[in-house]
Every structure is written in structure tokens, then in C-alpha cells.
Length: 408
Image 1: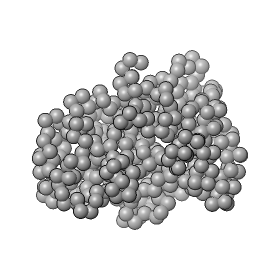
Image 2: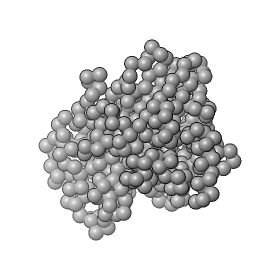
Image 3: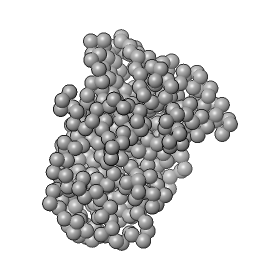
Image 4: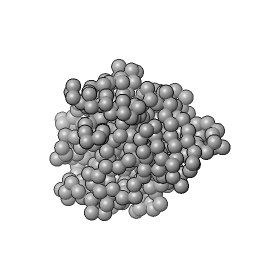
């Protein structure tokens, strides 16, 4: 760890508080890649057919992927400085508050959030993520999450650009129990009890734990809590069986056949909310009126979960030949989705195609101090420079509340 501390300190010094990160690719064995993550066509199964296709790229992650057969560092972001590589998790373990700030370090002792792109040809099974209390029973943490659909990656919507959320008002618990009981009979029919919403590029959703959702086939930027717990409640998706083990894997073993317990794990009031969209839907909101200066910063993820701000995200657009100084309340992970330029001393360039294992110049992690002091972002290209960045708990006390886009 002493060696990592020195390497991380050197990288922070050279980058003025900004770390260069390598791409982090994650496969999912039960999904079909949507092929819009800019990976070379030959590389979507680079980890082997048995591991599944690569349909996710994780950003600023200190959270391992909970995949069967995965190496221990799958899902972890690597810092690259010269010819040295080390995980962001090890760097934060070594330097703590120097990277993520006193408040987050003192409260959590780690970077407790991460973000990803997920990209699938079709929909994901109807599932939920356990809350903190439920996840603790199996030694894990709960998982609230959020979605934003970047226009730059969504020129095509693939097979099903609609997401089912929750359950129709009036649905009974017995109806859902009956669905789980039919698991091995083919389609268990749980989507008959839900409602699908058409997904619109440039918008998003905030999704607390214990809410059923079957994400559609748009490429999704997903700031979330640093956990990979889930429970699938749908038995068949696009003709592909979903193993029942994916329903029960993050519940106590003695509850795996207790269908009433599995249904009671859902937040019933939230799932059957007749005003679901108004309670969870997000439209971008400009942070300030700066468009005349050649740049604009927008809130894309905001709102609170059980009264707490757990994560937020912004989308920055800088026009060709322009620069700006952005100041934020905490550390953040950054991914560039269009154009080229610089952030501080580091070059930014959006690749057209990436080979598996290849280094890129599109991703960085900005320390809390650098974020608060202000970071210079400059567009050196001929098209808009666009980047997404996400933040940890309580970093943005001035972020809007759910529904604020209607008044903006």
C-alpha cells in the first residue's frame, strides 16, 4: 500500500488533482450486447463466450462486479500514470480524503458510488435492487440508481427502447406471488402487471431500491450506489430463460423458496404509485445561464432518496474554441462522450473505436479539492465537447428536486 500511496501521490501531483483512468469493461452472461460502446466488433466477447458479452463500461468504480467466475478486479477502475497502473480503490484506500474529501471519507471510508454505461440489444428482465437493510442480511449494500440516456450514444434505439417500471395500481401481492410460482412454466407474466414508458434520449429517471424495473434498450448512463445486488422477477426475456438463481442470489438462503417473503421485499407503495412518472422522471436543468459564453452545464441526475442526496450528475457542453472553469462540491468521475479538448493538464479525446485492453483519453477522476478549487475545461476541436460527470453523497446541496424541470 505504501507503494500505491506514492504512485497515487505522484499521479495527483502531475495531474493537478486529476487522475487518468483506463476503460473498465464488464460482461453480463444473461444479456446480449447492444454494440454501441465503441468496442471493436471482434471484442464484445473478449472475455469468452462462457462469461457473456461485454455490455457495460464502468466509470470511477471501486466496486467489484458480482459476476459468476469473475476475477476479483472485474469492475474496478485502474489509474494509469506513465507506465504504472493501480486500482482507484487502492489509491483511495491509501490516500483517503486527499482524493474523495473529508466528508465522504470520514462517513464511508471509501468511494461509495460509481457510474456505468449499459448497452443491450433488448430489455433487461424486470428486477429490483435490495435496500440497505435487506442487502445487509447477505453482507452487501443496497442499491439506489439513476438513468440518463446520452444522445451521442443513442442514434439507434435497438430492439425495445421502453422501460417497464413498477406495478399497475390495483395489483395484488398474490398476483406477483403467482408469477413467481410459474417460474419454470415459461413466461411468468409479470410484465402483464406493469407499465412501459417510452425512453427519450437526453432525459432520465431516479430509481430508489425495491422498485421493479425492466430497463429498455437505450444506452444508459447510470450513476448509482456502489453495490451490485439485484433480484430478477421475470422468468423469460425475448425468449431467453432467466435462471431462478438470479431471483434469489441476494436474499438469505432460507428465504429462497418463500415466495411471500420475496414479494414482501418490494416497496409496495412505490411500485403501485399512480403518479410514478411524476415521482421519478428527470429532464435536464441548466445550472446557470452561461450559453452566451459558449458553454452550458446541466443537471441530469438530481433528487433525493428517502430524504438523502446519494448521488447527482451533470452534463457539460463546451462549444469549439471556448473554455470554462467548473467548480463542484465534491470529487467526481468524468467520461467524455463527444469532441476533444483538455481538462486541466490532461487531454480529452472521444474515440470512435476501442480495442479491448486499449488505453483511451476520455475518462478521468477529479479529486474533491480540485473540484472545489475549479477545473479548466477547454474545447480544442471543431465540434462540441460534451462530458458527463457524477458525484457522491451530499456533494451538491444546491441540486434541484424531482419535478423541478417543470418549473425551470
